[in-house]
Image (cartoon, rainbow over all chains, first blue to last red):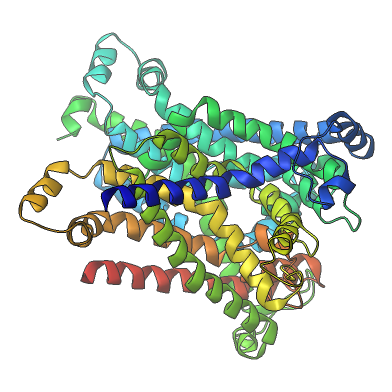
Length: 274
Length: 296
């Protein structure tokens, strides 16, 4: 009976693992095959990865999109970590009744669906465009500004700060550090793992963001990776090999982040609900 | 008291410094969440084309009830919600209970593999699924070869199957994500509780019902609320797999708001009204879920 159950467990988990991995295998294999072979169901690796890559870079500016995405994701991540950790630290270390009320109000913003914000945000940036074009529609700034501060990340840093040894702060103050000095010289280095986890969550969601860039980035040379992939995927006569090559390349940065920092990744996700 | 940690002599000064730490974040959240939220509410009482808006009172809200496209989008979204969210949560819980077995081998491999779909962007996996489930895509080729079906299933272009495809896709992408929360909660359950139950002669099903489920309740609540909010905002998958079609068979509310604002002749007022229905649904469904979790 038990061994029967045991076998069942392994069969079920193997099946679940196979289903989870298969689309990845298929997209990697397809990136090495010609479109014809892909559509005939070829599942063996081929020799056409470089042809596909050349065809891809001949028809679209993949490098430009990668650069756009990198610029936006890295800037967003750095600013998001700075703003959210300052706030999370402030709420926890300088705790007061008034600040707790403000904190709870901020948390409410997590319930606001982006769908309810996109129209007024678009209008806001359209009107900024008229006076300051460099910050309006179709700029990197317009993508970053509304997405870089999230109550989620502030909450995450506040929760982690609860674990931070307060004696270290006292020691820093004794050494004559200013309040901001204590934050940057003592808190930031001590909380490295929290920053790593926060960075991963923020980078991934920024790299993968689709709807808001779709609304504000209108010219092709400003396109981020998800916009480019979506565009390729909606072509009427798709070249499967070429498109899969693009998808593999676009997934590399996030996959790399995941495999290098899997521990922080999971800690970041789970730490937020504890 | 935490206040003593700061030191009493410069308490007033430190209170001001405390506000300086949080002020920028508060400003940003106010400017990019609460302010637009109020703008959307004001917009929802106005109507007109493009920037030419005038006050029309509750006309937009009345229009909702006779707008067949909107009603279809609501119906679709709720279908995804009612079918997909429970399947995914039960699946995630089931897998995590299997993985939590201390004697299980290859645990790390199974966990990583099932979590892997989370590294893909919603757009990338949607495009992959669109091709896998195409009329002459790999899924149909395989099913035909195994003689499980006589003719290809129209996964994308049939109104019924298109909904199934979306449900399969979302379940593939998010089950591993939810599993991680259950796994970490299971690891925090004290094993001695199970031992005591075993000594008392409780069966493993009984243990699951009387120990595991009650201990997981906060996580069940958390995952159902986040999944509900996510499904109500469904956009990337719909746009990139089915484009909302065939007809409006898979149109989601978010996609309809996008279409109203940026695809058709823009009607920002009515789009804002539709967006407020999502806000209302999120509030109502979250309250229901909180109540349901509190009762048991």
